[in-house]
Length: 466
Ligand SMILES: [Zn+2]
Image 1 (cartoon, rainbow, N blue to C red):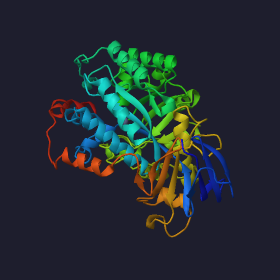
Image 2 (image 1 turned 30 degrees about the vertical axis):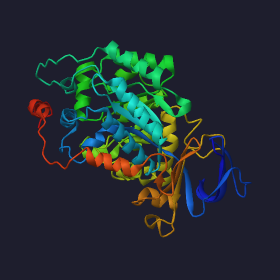
Image 3 (image 1 turned 45 degrees about the horizontal axis):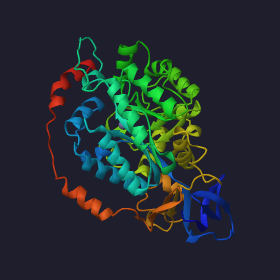
Image 4 (image 1 turned 60 degrees about the vertical axis):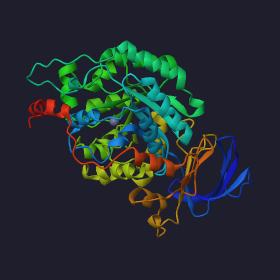
């Protein structure tokens, strides 16, 4: 591992900035102070801002193949369309994982939580190839294989109708075996690859699947990840299914903990929020996806006031339709200014940066190792070019990074002290080749017809009163 010293770089300190040198030794931050002795390679940090790497704390990499083409639907219909056209070739999974990693890195992220859609009957191959992609790029990967044990139609409330659903094609036990095998083969936290247990959500999972995941999480010390109450339909479904809220139910069956992160959390009541606080669960805010799918505005200011840890995600690239983490952070901050007239509760740019870095680390139970510029922590770092046109003229660098529209501002990035972005370019893979592959394996399209949507749309409209 190469040691290096970043010289004369701007960092944030309390309410101000300081110009310092930062020594990186054996992949960790060894010292932060002005005028340090150069250890290893000297890197010029002049006119650059150094921040801890952000976490893209919820995405689905293979959705990249359908970005820009998905119908303007709410989640339940959107999912039906998504799965009708989901990529079934592991090579596509590989390329979209590379693409997700690259876009995350070039917008300030050094970690990605990929709630990875598994190709049926090629589940371990899907996990293997995504792992390979993330290792090649060098981004820190939290691979959360997306599992369920109920079929798609079970994810909608029944309302007055009595619905029966097809059984899911794979048993709960077989699914849990796949995850356990994935842990054995791929879970290597020291090498930057982590496997999470990640039932997709209460809408498509039985208690047995949640409990099996909790058991694996306890046995192998794995983080837990799930969608939670993304839509009003899921709120209704939880009442039908459990006779209580989804949060009360998840607490009862033991899924919530300080290493549980929950994507969306749009439809929670005050008692639910208190439960997230009490269990120290983390909320992953995906504002662009929530707007795109009309899911609602998550009560993020209430979470913060209740002491619930919140971080940001892009969500999959077909409900966003990009992987620009800075865009998600901006939207996820200012969106809430319309939900609470008391501006003292609004999220400031510095708070947003802390949510995106330390908040992400907390949600993955690694705040002792990552998420801030602290001596002893691992060097997952991003250096921003403050001479970029979109960050000029010189005002408050973090203010403009969060509230502006920064483009091509990442100069360098390191994960565990290894440089993977230099001079604004990914150094570990050939991005021109990736562009060519994405181009060659796709075509310009306009209209597609989803058969599943045609089957379920009438029921959806009835049960949602549309
Ligand atoms: Zn999602």
